[in-house]
Image (cartoon, rainbow, N blue to C red; front, side):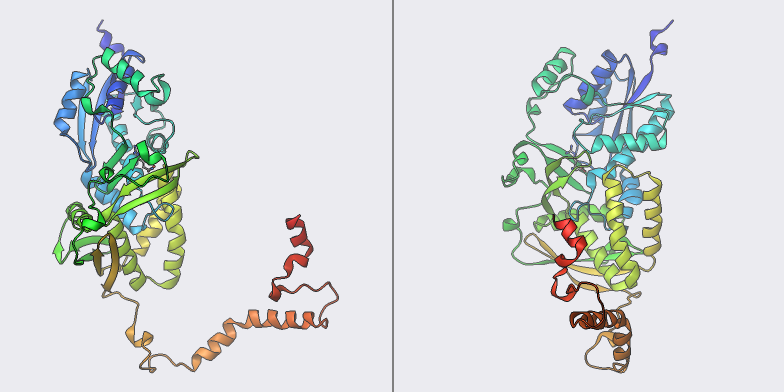
Length: 434
Ligand code: ARG
């Protein structure tokens, strides 16, 4: 009987790098599995997908699937991230966090196509990406087994891994000592590790590849106009473009103005803090413009509550819960808010900065007639007094009682002057303080 028929199959998310190349051999030799390599294109810089596919075949993969996910990444993931103004910890536009559920979805589909029982990824046990892959895969097919070779093998140190690679015929390129860990896609680049692990060290110039040093950016400002249709960026300087092209073009415009760099300390879901650098010129500019349009067009209560839900959306996605029912419910809320988010925002880019300098929309709720200081016909200013009296009634009532108590007239209980901030006199305050 053919031995091959007895082997179970695993689909591996393959990048062509050393880690995932060693994963192929490890899955074959240590786990006795047939390996199917899946290469996802999410708009990252790469040396050629065909070459990477060739490498996977050379390493003995029984099948190689190259999947172009870029358009799906844009229409299903980035569009939702823009609607939610997605920023983890108010800083990080979630670029890696957005790609993982999409790659997971295709891993599961590839597993089904090939009758594989297992799925594997090359993440370490210290990062968020392992959580995102595994939670997404479980959500899409709980019967699939997930294998994380890098977390399990005893090749912790790079030299051990290189030795294993050489022993098993995995090509080790000269440039293997990459000083950083980099993840990138159409939405931007994430750079971590190496000298960046010291949070006091300024990021070296060589980590940045899509943004210029602001000092070298043009000496005159660059203006761009972003047109939105129902919350989705649809045009750049009046030219209608598919969103993937718009993002690529804006990455180059804003990046050449030195805009889009982030250097932050971030709280990973796995519990540790890490120092992360990102380049996200188009992402940051589009979210800024989208917020400006919402400021103009969203009804106040929706806007205010949306701000809170945006944080929850970002947390869900950061924590690997793209396919969770809560995240999907939040998506429904976000989608409901985007009706009428149609209009144009003008951005001014200058030496690393980006500011909104204009916004317009046929759906604007901003009404110059109401807002103007010059003409008071649109709003009866005298009516404001009644509004203030009534909305302030609870505070007035409270203040009157407190004033009476301060004089000792209204109560026999011990007085404590809330207005003075002297609430430490209250028994509860004492209990907290001790
Ligand atoms: N810290 C970011 C996140 O968790 C980026 C991770 C990027 N991965 C990498 N291998 N550099 O989303």
